[in-house]
Length: 259
Image (cartoon, rainbow, N blue to C red; front, side, top):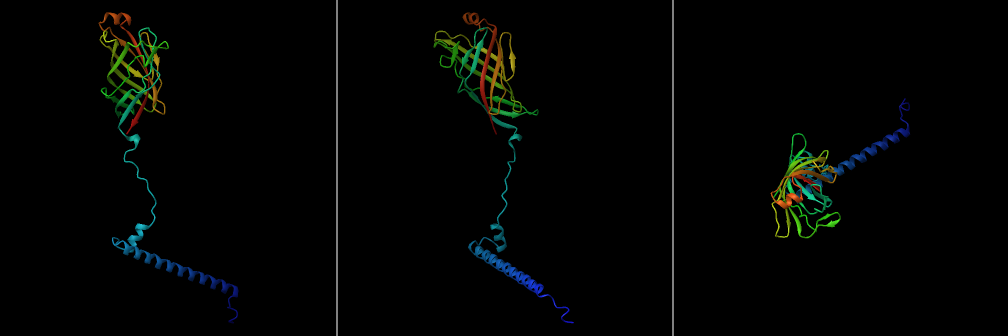
């Protein structure tokens, strides 16, 4: 009867192999635990601030890196700084005369922008810091010829503010300024007072008009504006410029918003 219950030799061999493998794995695991604990103890001796080997193991264990997000995302900002820089390719015109081709590169200034409830930005530039290059023989041509050296027009900005829709690139800025015309130091009439809206859209006056271009991905745009010039009380200027009349401005510019 004993031979009836005798297990096959190959099954016994396999069972013995599995038993030996399990014993070997248990031995290796126990050895690993002893080494790890011993390493923790040695490191604890080197760093007495650790209160336990378990705490040290927690300190040296690799951790999954995490990225801390900014508490306020850029699109959630409600106030930021805005910088305006004028570039080449501008134009100025008055009455029915041809336009000056005007290089205003290097002009501009900085200001503040506040986000409105409708998503647009209310921008205000510091007039004291705004610089617009003079119109002179260095910066302007008329019909391809530099204007005569004695003639110079100094542009003094009194106010520049309005709205910017950054989603669609539309800009509307009210521009108030004084244009001081001079032809040598012996003739300096009162300034021409300009009050217009610079826009990226289309604008028209009685005689003049133009179309701007909206902000692109790099912040570049073209602003155009038409304003009405009133007589300044100077006989020569009022007659030559046929005041009252339209004045026209075209300004290529770059806007930069920073948080």
